[in-house]
Image (cartoon, rainbow, N blue to C red; front, side, top):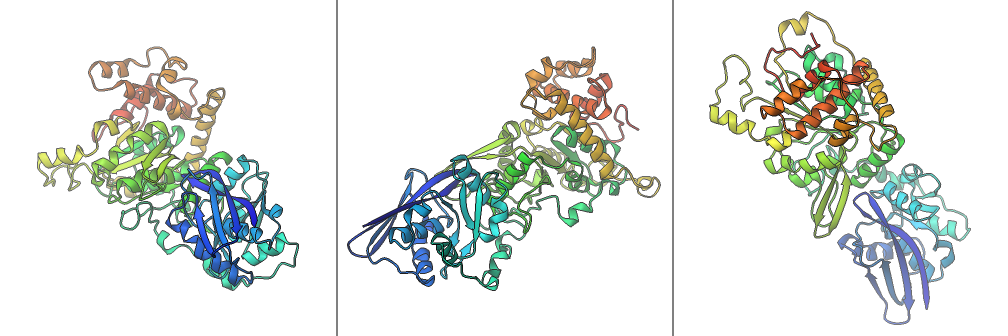
Length: 541
């Protein structure tokens, strides 16, 4: 009889659960039983592990083999358990010492030839291992940089099962030909353009990262005119506010949204780990960049389904666009073209900063603290705000605009009408401020806010609860007269007043004011309520 155990990690969303992998050999008819609530892909590991062990020059035990995954109540899936199962079997068969793997955490998929292939979610898995007290982790060689982001953990990156057996037995480590593993470095063709949760056909094609060469060339100076929209974009970046851009086609709505990540401050170390963990689980980490240090930018197509936006899919849910945009920007172009159910599903993560998805395979909680930017035409043909030329009926215009529900828009802090660009804006006034200039002011504003909230759990104005922003940090006397008047007329809700105050504090931080004055509150109210074509924001020219 032989018994051995080692450990691996089961991922539930971006949180890891340590799983003990136990192997038991008994005399009897040769059979391989895998227990512990495995899914289909994990059940198939029996064949992968057997072939990998044999093709690595080892002997498969001709006995009754039972492999248990504990705790048995936690659903387990994926191919990341292969390496731990193989080593537990070899230790139970006395090919390696059971004590050499008892305190090891192993993560990796095995090919039939014994090579170790990378898997998704290495970073959150190693984080879970570190939290559980494990200090030695074995991962595929190509994910060593990702696993090494976790402090206090010794990481061993291997290419094959043969190499790991040699290391554990203090034998000469065989060389593995890199050409045999070249396919592991290629991006998954299913992720080209980013096809995400829900399987194929869920209509989510996104751009992520914000640090690509193409994104670096997107400068705010390229946007002609639009002073009000530029102010709203700067305020959104400084305070973490949601933004709604409404205007005719060609006015620059998409250009503005694409340049928002360029004026956001770099992610902190903790934020980078959070974002990297989500992207690791989704399998979209950029090659050669194990740590995401720039705010992500996610722009799903309007045909995206609700599971692809908020997370879901069959079995255990996967991250959606709201989680992939965590600590970054989620841009919904042609927002009224999204399904009403998909749009309204955003309301909960907009308030809470996370999303909870329940499926038959389990319940998953994912981070979703993102900046929402929506762009829309005023009507189906897009010419409603122009003088003449609109062919839409009044009913069609109302129906189109009503696709963005009141409760959703009530959660959006900034609403701006983007006018059509005039000839003088295009050729008469040169380039506007660059992204670098605006980013410097945004960083200073965020530093002022962080200093103000240093003894609180908040860092940005958009995060402060309404009661706190109303009572703990007072605006200048008489600054709220215009907002109070709008509340009495029913034009502003209680939630809307709180959001006006948050935006007013952001505008004050940008201007270097100690607290919001009447002009700051008036500008915030105008940015909150929207304004008609041709109007000018107070304090702007």
